[in-house]
Image: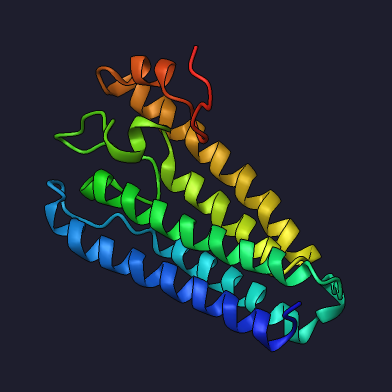
Length: 194
């Protein structure tokens, strides 16, 4: 099992790649926003970077908060976590390419807003949030620790609330969104369709 500095290096690489993709998407699509401004929320960005740094340093500074397994399958679990992180980054990018300038780190309507139901939005209503659940879940497998488990719980709680706020705003103001909500699951696609 990878420990200490290796866990920290992996966490930093995952966060750096996520942030790079986020910066590229915001730079690409903010120019298309009819009402101007940016989809970025500076307070959220600062919070996310601070939290990311705390998660990254934990394996080196407070390794006692992490789980150390010497079983032969432990490295396989960490590699599966890396795979889940890679899938999360891919889903996030795919979702952002379909959402384009409608992406925002907060609930917001734009003048030409319409229901996005293509790509991953044909499968779930909130694929960006799903990708974040996958990302922190993957990092928990890479770095099984009390800190990472708390981040998973926080992420699920926070983005579930954010999804509710988004849905209230969109359902009340966007024609067709209520029908979309009825036929499309919130975070995870249906395996069996009725």
